[in-house]
Image (cartoon, rainbow, N blue to C red; front, top):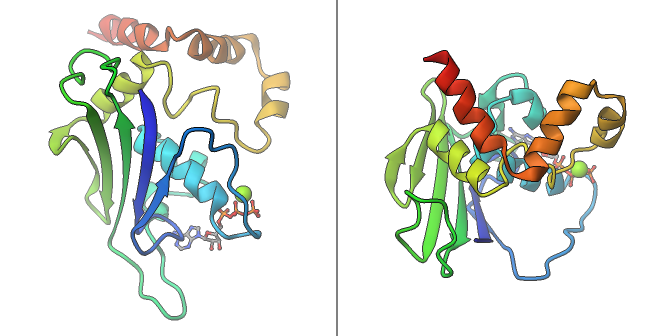
Length: 183
Ligand code: ATP
Ligand code: MG
């Protein structure tokens, strides 16, 4: 599975539809302060099912919707699509029917988030589980926020273990066990 494209529409500063093509070997995105580099990484986290507004540097999840500028009115929805190359058919079962997987998350003011996988409606949990089984996701140790290294050093053993579990690729199992215990 390889991420090939991230498409943003009305997400934070990306008011017009913007495609970030992720060519093999892409190692950096550069630009002046405030141009939207961190917003790109947040869009990636968000489409994978992030549900903490604080991880999006917002107070509520609707803060990811383009809030308007002097020359542009605010938008009523934000949408991010992540396109994944699955030609080698390595996707977790249930998502492994096609050569390409397109995951879409859309948030509408007052109506919350809706997810799709290849145009089929799915639950947030399905998307989170897809990425957890693929050893990635919104909490992937590969996505390092500013200040996160210091957090890791100061973390309590329990939260540090959570990070190691993500890295070991067993957090999907952990999530399932937690759900089984709730039933
Ligand atoms: P730096 O180099 O300082 O880290 P950056 O390239 O990472 O900058 P971002 O933090 O991604 O920049 O982008 C910040 C910009 O996004 C700001 O100009 C902010 O106004 C804009 N922004 C954030 N949320 C919204 C929103 N909901 N609507 C419109 N613009 C937004
Ligand atoms: Mg930044």
